[in-house]
Image (cartoon, rainbow, N blue to C red; front, top):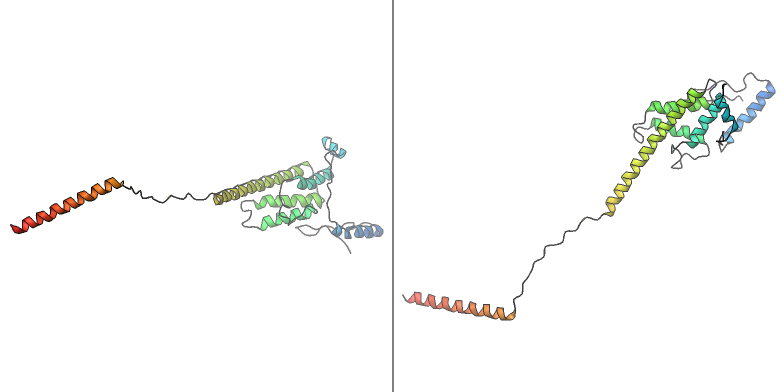
Length: 216
């Protein structure tokens, strides 16, 4: 069984292709165990003495490769927020997250596919590539990582504000208008009797007037 490093662009040269037979067998055994890996450790600690080499003249591609892979862990891109992409296999799950963004037409509308391609290519170059991956390549990759992190953070903040606004609207009950009241004024009993007396007097006068008019 021969193992080859794979990427989105297809297989690369098999590992240990020109190595002696015994070494090839050992490589195959070790590569066969890669599938059993359940955790990707941090490659460079913040106080790692090897980082001091970056301040001197020389070719330190391997350090920039490790920095690029570690940058995923320290980025604020929420690719494991919903539990679909756990933190255990950082690189594998990060690439799956990027591919989902790249193929999505609605959830993350507005994120440039070129940006996602830059991250996918940068990750593959850092982890599997055999070419140069120095400071310029690392900075390009880091800039793309920061841009995506800022965009996802802004979207998350906007979504949270919308949810809070909707929840606030639901808690505010509409103002209930008070029904119109009819005011009834009750007269004292003395005034009631006076009004009844006046009514009777007026009725008697009207009857007398009608009787007089009929005799004329």
